[in-house]
Amino acid sequence: MNFIQTRGCDANKPETVTFSEAILSPIASFGGLYVPETLPELGLEFLNKHLNSSYKELASDMLSRFEIDIDNETIQKALDLYDKFDDAKNPVPVVKVKENLYVSELYHGPTRAFKDMALQPFGMVLSSIAQKRDENYIIMAATSGDTGPAALETFKNRANVQVACLYPDGGTSDVQRLQMVTEDAKNLKVIGINGVFDDAQNALKTLLASKEFNDALKEKNVSLSAANSVNFGRIIFQIIYHIHSYLELVRQDAITMGEKVYLNVPSGNFGNALGGYYAWKMGLPVEKIIISSNENNVLTRLIKEGKYDLRDSEVVSTTSPAMDILKSSNVERVLFDLFGAERTKELMNDLEEKKCYELTGVELVTLQKCFDADFCNGDEGKKYIKETFEKDGYLMDPHTATCFKSYESCSKPEIKSIIYSTAEWTKFSPVIANALTGEEDAKDLDALTSISNVAKLDIPDMIKGLFTKEITQKTVIEKEEISKEILKFI
Ligand SMILES: *Cc1c(COP(=O)(O)O)cnc(C)c1O
Image (spheres, rainbow, N blue to C red):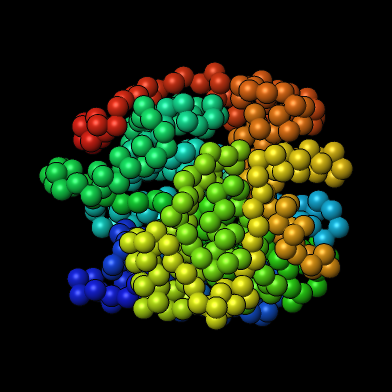
């Protein structure tokens, strides 16, 4: 299958590219993104066929329908990485929380957040493409907490790929920072920046656009690539778990085959939600996709009012930091799918030039046939964490908690909902401890201990171990020095 471009084609790039090409340079003509030319039709027949399949069998068959230019052996090796999850037989458990509400837990991988679902297999695929082409790549990432650890974990010791990961020193949780600075593989470089996440991200953008930097890389025979969530190599692995979660509900006798469900997704860059949208288009019985946000609620306003407006918006820091995003990149792929390349280009140009775009009334109706949305602030989120723990015995993180508000405001109660849980409690423990016990400003280790006591849960070894592991990545620098530091590393 070939890939086409969301903003149409300029004269410089080919009309269509292969999957590998779309992975290696994910930015298409006019700054657009790559999308599959068509989506495979799966339908009920596929779902019935896989009712009793393992996650990997389901994944393998679904991927084969995309007919991508990756050999089967590589795909199998990539999928084998799900064996490292807590339960190799079922990497994504789906848990009933209360009547008609199920939580699909996407955080049972090595870094305890949902980024592993896509980055684990993606790392294997990218490295294998690089080896086959005999090329060397450097992946540059700026992270506010979850992407960094997951990218380092997947690329460590992989051939033909190096990673340089920038994080704001003091701007992540202790657990997230330790997950990065204790990585000791030779192909990884972790750099703390004196500043906030935006400084790290802007520094990265400047660097990627710098001719001097790119020339220096060329001289060293290294090409740039990106592992961020606009990369279709990540999106493709995010379709699978939506299908799996649906089949889990059928297996648990919660629904009958063909019954429609809500997919309720805590959203930032919209990769997770887009995976659900594609699964729906491929035949998954979905009533609607519900988009949950925090105080950074541009997506709610887009879906409710048809306006994507950044003119008076600034990112605010919240208790669900992985969703502190204003420019939600993957929305573009939905716009393309619904309204075509010409209109997408127009809307995205408006966003760049006027910091705002507006859908027509007809377009808004079309969008609302697929999506509904609401946002949940930090205090409401903590209330849901406490209530759900005390009433239903279910402990969740602050990202997942945002879905409980939209569950109440957007879904018809008689239709079952799948809420996606994107992080384990261990990754955002100070907020959860505060929600459960009222304690303020706890350090991660104290918060972990108090949650573990209240909820009678063990702290997983990989989290506990972080606090005694040697810190090997000690670089903390000013943002002006990043380029020098990275070139030294390569
Ligand atoms: C990345 C992330 C999200 C947002 O996912 P998108 O695919 O970017 O919408 C939500 N929660 C957590 C914990 C994350 O790490």
